[in-house]
Length: 574
Image 1 (cartoon, rainbow, N blue to C red):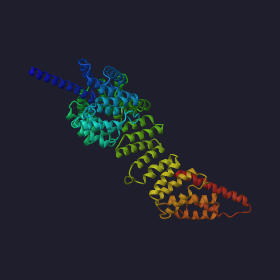
Image 2 (cartoon, rainbow, N blue to C red; image 1 turned 90 degrees about the vertical axis):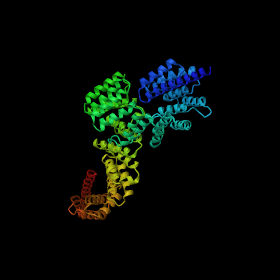
Image 3 (cartoon, one colour; image 1 turned 60 degrees about the vertical axis):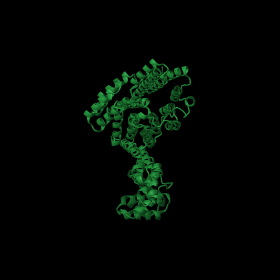
Image 4 (cartoon, one colour; image 1 turned 90 degrees about the horizontal axis):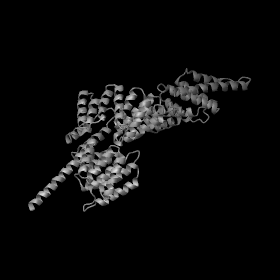
């Protein structure tokens, strides 16, 4: 009898191990994005035991990963109807409610799940992790349905209870990543140990922090290879190595090898044809890439993976069809989750959809900067966008992007001349004179003895006060003249312009002939033969004749002509 009991206990233990391994196999498929295989495993487990709580929970998570919100909701509702106190069912239902925007209902279910799962050592770490996962998944910078702080608190609690559970630290890393705390995210991922999904996420986090166009850094490649060592069937890592060899090394043979490995470790799907489309794109076969993409979208009932719509956007841009490119880029953002989006995606949208709308470009660039946590990458994105704006003659936008780049950096990382060349000048040429003046004055605050801040401030203010009635530009022109006098050769043109403008202002607006004459003489010190200054000098030196009124009118007319000439000339040089 005792021997039979031992055999029975052993059989029960063996059954538990088989069950656990089956669940883990399904979870491994889930994390490797083999959602069809994961669903098949969970379906089989439930067919043999309809009361399998873990299988039910993970089947619901698989539905959510496949964007089948209604399927997950129906599953969890049915499960709660038969077992209303199962903590994982409560957490799963809360997950669905967050995605629906019902934050209050979700929080109630989460708290009920915690209460129901509490034992001697506190809440069940698996349940706490499920709650964390729900909040992380439902959170995006745009919607913010999930509560990342709440998730992090529960996940840290789970980590104290189960310090060797890699799923806890994977989810915690994801939470920190969505809070744009890259350092904390990497620390959490590393605590997951030799766990392929966490190692892969580490690689992708480092990849988002690399400079545009620089490819994959050594640390990214190291983590991708480590993910494969941890799980030789981890398909996402093979996919990234395919991209590396295709896009950066241009090693098409090796890229093809990784494409084959990715396909062999993925569920059979028309989506796998994407790799062929990507290869065609790199080889500049844009029409072929479009045809493959259209087939994938058609075969998936317009529910393809986000990457397909992104590739279609890039392909149509190369085919010079920005209208269609914009449509596909918008489709990309409709299908993409936060983790699918990188900074360049917003620049793609700006290029495809914002050619004639600077506001779209401005918004997209700001989003691109916000999504990256590394300053050097932010500056790279802004530099590229500013160059595009300049090439498209969007000078105000160019100035704004350069100003944002300047403001993001610490003082010791800035070059003050950027405020003139990158901000004040494009503002001025774009007609934003007040902003040009502000940028010039910001430069003056840094370099008060330099002529350039005063000069561009004067030009901007003169463009605002074209009649000179307010005298807005005169203090700046006086400073320009003073500084120019220290080097009459180097600052010849600036000195002449300042002296001429001050002379015209003194005579026409202030009625101060002596001051006007003095400014003319200062101007002639820079250029003794300057025609404009000589003409003004002639008007000032003209003797009144008998019909003084007529001569005065003639003199005024001549001065006004000079004023008009001077103002026009200032505008041309500005």
